[in-house]
Length: 285
Length: 82
Image (cartoon, rainbow over all chains, first blue to last red; front, side, top):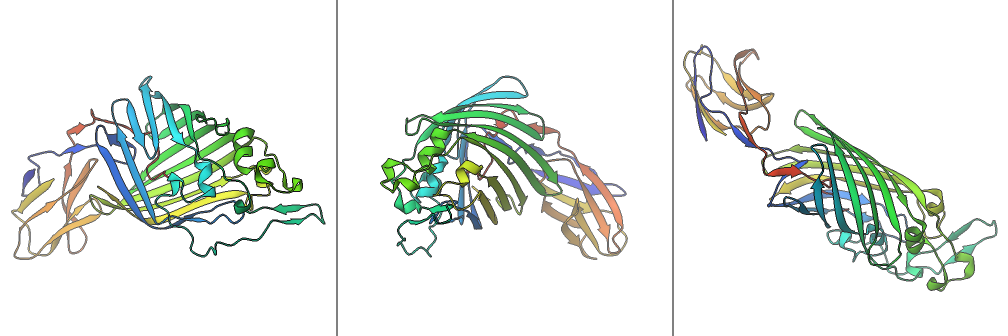
């Protein structure tokens, strides 16, 4: 489109722009949303001997129809209940498994930490003071990955969003589930797009015990055995982006998730939190 | 949007065209027209500023039509694989 704008003591435009709404919140339906972010970042691994997950390439893959959608591994069907409310059913990979192996789909685009020698010490029981039993993730039985199925309800205002969701193990791997409350706020400050979220996630004892508990399946001394109780885990995060051109943007992300006491006391767990940070550039195809 | 602007009655001097606070192009003494591309998703002002930083001309660019019928709110946060 060419607008010829003669200038005298004032200027005037002969044509107005027709702009397609396109941002990080809204997507065009029936089109693949493809992007890749490149930079430096890390997601910490709370497991003993669990390598932190370097975030060098982060894909963003989504497709939305009128109701069906695929969004970064989640497949679902959403019903718009009103202008401000929506509900969807979905299936999505359970990401707990990612901490145990780099073969998990969540880690396809991450590179393993090369400082790992591949060797690990045998479990060391140190109960002289009756306190610490540390167990490497490499010394326990393999945990399986699974898919969760769930329901999620949204309530939207223009720059705000609330979510309530429950998802449950759909493959009977651990028969557990998790419930979450989510709030997100968006801001536009000059060219910067910012969003911050506050979540609180309840995870069932079946889910947590399967991944982070220790019992007979692990073949360890009974003194290592540990049952994880259900618990609430708060999480906060912030994302910032600024367009550099039509396709390129600066992207920064940070999140912090606190693990509840029963989980962080597990012999498999060395940290009481999971942090994730990334800074780089993003390209949208 | 590609735009072409001709300036008719400017006093001698150097001028630059801004989209909001972003400089688009500058004019020299001998040039009194320019062409450039502007990209915007909300209403903006085009402003011509002289060498002393004083706005000489301002014109709003207003969005009259926005195609939103085939868009929908994204469910997950972008870049949320991890």
